Length: 139
Image (tube, rainbow, N blue to C red; front, side, top):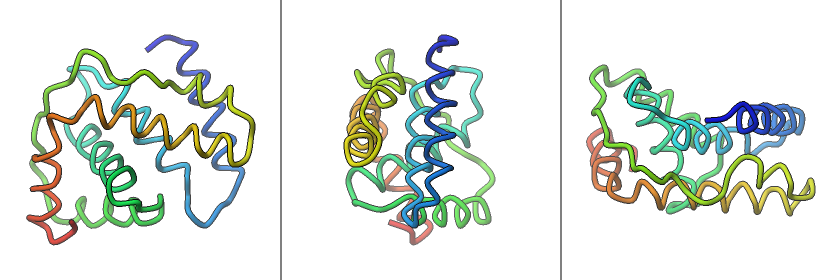
């Protein structure tokens, strides 16, 4: 990822953390960026957790607090994480696009669109993510 993308992500993090919202939208920003910017050198746990969060948010409608609790539960239960194939294209929406959206509901909708875009790029990993959650009773 470019320095520009990282700067946009950092600015989004400042904005989401400053909100102090009960739904913890910040988690979705972290997950979308982690999956979109992953490299072959990225730790498997980071990619798996990001995809777990994107799945739970986009397909199950879960908020960031719920995703955060699932991440904590998984971290307590599992130590070997699958190495997942990284798609070449990781979604059309970026942190820059989200940051360009007006603060408030418009930016929240842009975060949702970003999550959906990245999750769609990783669609081939869906069965692995669902199976992992089911294995631990978290689906």
